[in-house]
Image 1 (cartoon, rainbow, N blue to C red):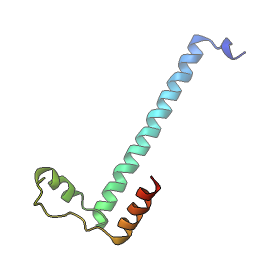
Image 2: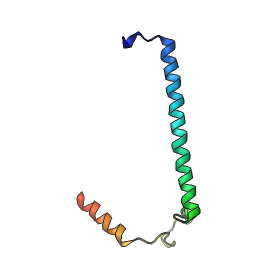
Image 3: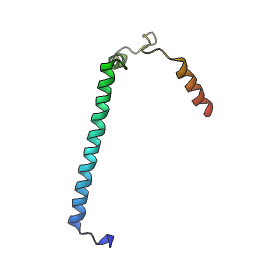
Image 4: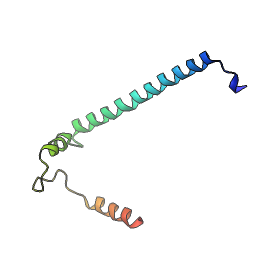
Length: 82
């Protein structure tokens, strides 16, 4: 029963699947770009600092973000699991 699909019907289903996949990819990509834009505008992250890091990549360069004690504790927990 399932194998009785005609070739043209199979191509139609494949075309619709491609369009749906492209639309889902489009929505995911643009929502990711919007979240980056929103974080940059609200000041949550400074992506210009990260882009400057590419040009100023030396051992003496300024630290971009200070590390929190909570972050260090979480890393210790994660590494202790290994």
